[in-house]
Image 1 (tube, rainbow, N blue to C red):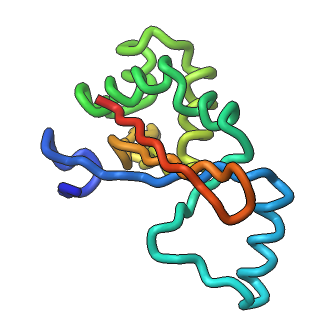
Image 2: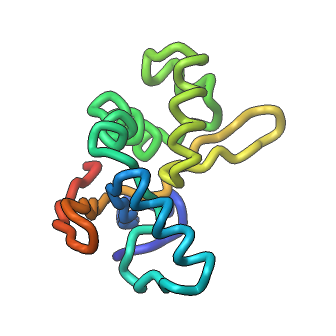
Length: 142
């Protein structure tokens, strides 16, 4: 992984690992961690989705294009990003806040504006087909 901080230049390539796990399994896993019965391994995802569908809504083609615009154009505000992307400000704000909750972007307050910063350019997906088994696939924003 090449680093340079968020948007540290064209060479930045930060991998973010997501997991897919049914809600009941995720809840049981979280409780086991809290009780000290389970310690997550170093390579395990820190961000989890309930289904492939919910993940695909966040990483839709339209949203990947939005991430590309942020990486390439480095807009200083959501207003500038709305102009560059052709998306409505309200929709854009909601989308970016959702992406921020998953750690995909940061929204940095600059004066009275929010500046979007992309945190990852590559994604690894760990999909749980059965309890304690997984299959990893990769996706990249490029």
